[in-house]
Length: 132
Image (cartoon, rainbow, N blue to C red; front, top):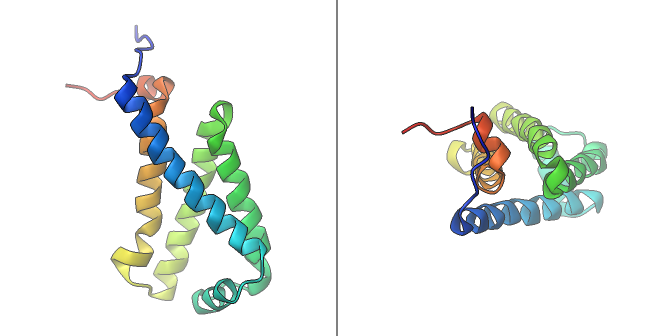
């Protein structure tokens, strides 16, 4: 039977740093959507997103990020943010955005999000063990 194995200090801190980077970025991204900044309005228009949805998207981003930041709900937050990032990827595909810099940015962020959580949460290591 699988047991919880203690996480090394290096893995724990690497996971915290990765998760921290994701949290800071998403808090910033969610916060600027709550304020009608010109860059948010113009980007929304370019991507075909109704500008009145910016606040809703900002609240969803902040809610998912706060759930992810809190250890007891971090997996739920990661799942919700993964869905949110999937929607962002779709919007960029539909808008014809550049592939590596814009469209796949949600994939990069998702890898950091789940990688950070995997490194700092031993329960995920039980669910998704790496085999040697």
